[in-house]
Length: 495
Image 1 (cartoon, rainbow, N blue to C red):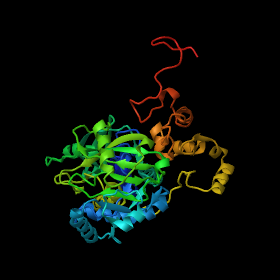
Image 2: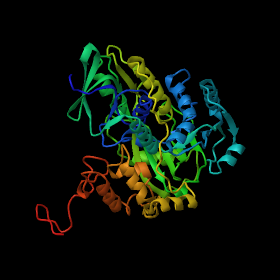
Image 3: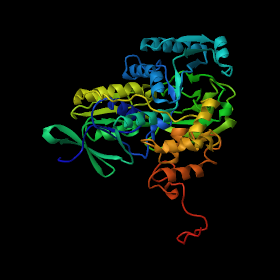
């Protein structure tokens, strides 16, 4: 082991849970590494969800899921101030559409109160219509949860990663884990060897935050097998012209398959409708289906009327890491000292992520016994959002850097300066999706139809070793350029 770097803790997975854990670990004086199979943070479950900060009334009382939901919700305002990501506490409504289902709505109210959710109450139809003029004609009442909110999950995850990196955490991308083995470290201490991307990494503690692949990582070290089922959810995203159709997040009464199809504004001003809930076998099965999108439209009409689906600008699907017991699996793995699971993190996992980070980092330090990092910096400089600032502030930005006045993405008002900033950060954008997730570029009505070429040019200028030919949408296998004009297959290039 002489000369080999030994990390104090190694996190597998750079989704919102993994990056939250990494940031909390960076409060300690130690050596930490995050391994991610894809080319960037927020490349799996964390990038394709409802972006809801749940109040905490849905999870079964007494579960870890319920506790961490409420704790995480309470942490969001401070986290948003420190890291500078968009978060709006708009509140949510769970709509009852049949008088005979009122006992279920009242039971949800009592569960929320038992979980510690503040300010919950049931509103009748008259008040409900005042709150949501486009509520469905069949709606009779709703559970009002004013502490619910919406956020930008891309910016949140990137901000957590940047904060962790600023405070000393290393990141390695394109590093899919293929083996996890116990080893004896120098001095006889127990540890782990993790093989990823063809390289070996050694660590005292390993944290499994691998999303839908968490079962595969867990099963490398334990005979007590874990099962994670990919649960696909399909969505439709409508243009900002439809963003005001509802003012709050509107849920259906929950079923055993989840919270049903919701209708919500987004922090970017769009309207989001979905998801479905279909258990599948393919851990990369993020395609949309005609049946799924038809179900989104049909079910959403039960709670909200006249949704202008003609304003749809894109559809997408994401995979939730569903554990059949419907509970977060967090903590040490029996027979694998120094190995911690953070698995089964489905909804409300985004909401719970700040609390998950604290919990797992504390568990890791119970093993490591590290002192506090006295130079920990909690604040991070955000990338300015030109849609959420005033004209005067924008003019001051242009005075500091004229590139803030050069708009590249017209639909979402994203400037050249913001894109270059996204590329220069650590970890920074290396692909079109990396720019998209950090700046909001490409998310508008034209869906990257106009801004892609210029963003590709900026990426090639900013990212070391990246040429226009090598720019990808989201890492290996998604190159944007397949050849040059007037170049026949196998022939010479003629510019």
